[in-house]
Image 1 (cartoon, rainbow, N blue to C red):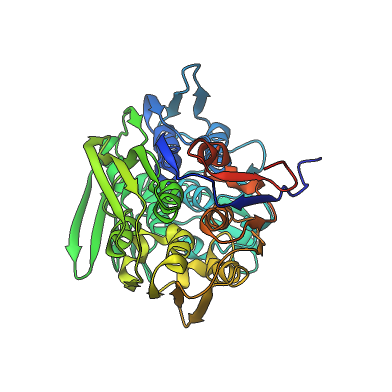
Image 2: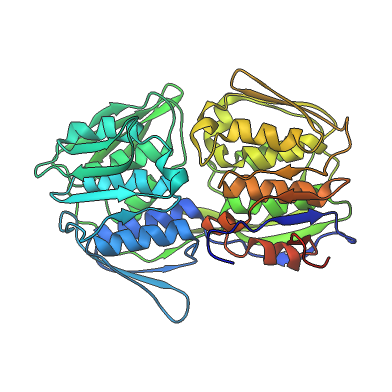
Amino acid sequence: MNAETPIPHRARRPAAPLAGTIAVPGDKSISHRALMFAGLAIGETRITGLLEGEDVLRTAAAMRALGAEVARLDDGAWLVAGPGLGALRSPDDVLDMGNSGTAARLLCGILASHDIFAVMTGDASLRRRPMRRVIEPLAATGAGFAARPGGRLPLAVTGAAEPLPLSYRLPVASAQVKSALLLAGLNARGVTEIEEPEPTRDHSENMLRHFGASIDIHAQGTGRLIRLRGQPELRAADIVVPGDPSSAAFPIVAALLIPGSRITIEGVGLNKLRTGLFATLREMGADITVINAREAAGEKVGDLIVAASALRGVDVPADRAPSMIDEYPILAIACAFARGPSRLRGLAELRVKESDRLAATTDMLRANGASVAIEGDDLVIVGGANRLGGGLVTTQMDHRLAMSALVLGLAADAPVTIDDARFIDTSFPGFIPLMRSLGADIAAEGAPA
């Protein structure tokens, strides 16, 4: 079987409740940023807990190609020695960002404000995703961009020799666009100002402080004004990456839905701008308890105890979307098993993820007997009315859709099959073995149960 051959998997209800203690891989968003900021700093940064999924490894390779020294140590930690802000070099070859929209968009910010030339590409899925949302504001630095129609990869970037600071109001809340502009502003003389209409995940701001940058954040209406002073001397600073709350979402929902289950997930990031799913599940009646709360490298961390719960429908406001944008497919699974209707509002952003996640999530639920509809940018699910499961889910190269469908199969009346599990490792390496360690029944299609 070659690397291009799909690997279907089947999930069915396990014979016993889920139980055990696990740790999920490091936070994907923080892992990308840790490599990038460490690669711009002077000195050696030690990173522990880095997510070693394919997306993050693409970022490591890109920073290495731009002149940073990036190496994995024997103890599993990573060591990054940056050449310093403004000292990156043009890569010798095309930068292949694989499936990672985060890596591609954030890297645009770095490339725009360095006097270098680079070309980025990605896999078939990433080449379909729009980059115009970062290209257009970054062009104001003086950088040049050449892309396919719609601002799609491959993308050639000619960085500005004397980058200008930016003043920009985000038309829609986007942590990726905000972070790209902050990364560009680092190497520009003067102050970069960014207005966001509502707060989005602030890992970049936390990391900028951690590395010694001067950044001020002020509330402004329902959003925030962020001011970054350019050309600081970033200093190496060790980082402990917390467990990814987006990854923790999958075993959490599985444990909530399988009767009698009780699991512990250690060291999960609890940044308040990332925990919208946890708040929503609690509103639905979920039994989720935080213990051993602590702080690491400017990020809140804690251990989660999750017990099976009878869930009820929920109405999720649109302004919660930035704090849980990646978790809507798995939340939709929880809603399909909840008692009564749920409405998930304001999901336009899901149309430009690895797949059109709004349509793909709807297709996944319908293929397995759920009552679901798209109304404008809202997803409406009526839970508890139908027997679920028995369907085949087309994953569309989307790792989160694949994992959500497998969780659906664990709780459904009939097994659920996904057409391909290969892409799960882009964000959650070891997902299937970890779920099996809790007692989940997930196997390659055709393998013995």
